[in-house]
Image (cartoon, rainbow, N blue to C red; front, side, top):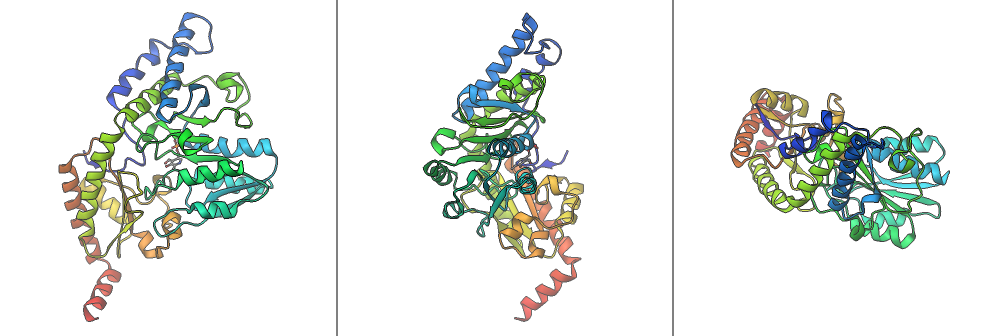
Length: 390
Ligand code: PLP
């Protein structure tokens, strides 16, 4: 098997999580809404998972609503607030995940206004720009906790303070952050937060939206009275149990995993940046511990990752959701990268199971592959020739 360095796309399900989930497929299979014992057993498991998810982010259990993942949580947060308010202005950033960006664009077609804040060269939004964008009719600020392509962590505490000061609701897409860096909704002044289990060693298709008590939000799905009558549909009990178990494990191990991932990502970045024609993208320190985004001059990232896949290293170009498209990453372009630099950007995301030996192997394979492709690139060779002549 190849070396997996694409944990921001998804993670495997931790064995301990899987073991917790398994009984809920066919042994304890009841519908948590049923009154009989089967139902009560399932309901008990859901309640425990709600507590686990809440504790991982400093919330109370009744403030957690289970969803199918990050996309649904993001859509609901934005559309649910908009529907309740009927009109108004939303502040977001230009580097959000499409789940937020496209929802804002949709809301614009429905008569809402949106401001898309720029980022600096490290991919960070400034809290001051949030303050300056506020209007009388601002109903919501939605700024991601950490970017999925670069790992850059946004000034969430400062934005939370501004939101509180001005009495505006604050949502954060924390899909990449939860389980990887400490998140405390009380301390950070967050009113709504999206999370997704498959980004922290839980199952796919299981997510949650944190809703601060009293947040005025429209219901998402009409039908049954599940999730306090806000999101109808029979609960995905096994998935929810997995989310809870994964959140508890991630929270308990957050420091040691972050230390391990930081050490390996430093090693990987140093090893790759020693190669001529490479450039680091993102923030040096305010970054998720496992993220390393590097541009390789003169190479199309799509070509590099196809060759890396054949050579035994699994990585992605930009975000996984946009792979297959040959467009350069909008996140990197917003950070001021030239189109060619953005086209040559590869995202390596390290996970808790990666070893030093794997990183050293990945460095060697990547360097050899990149050099081989660069030698085939007329653009790179010409630039190298020009540099020599200067
Ligand atoms: N938000 C961010 C920042 C993400 O990275 C992702 C997934 O990559 C999502 C939202 C969507 O999450 P899900 O795949 O659970 O729908």
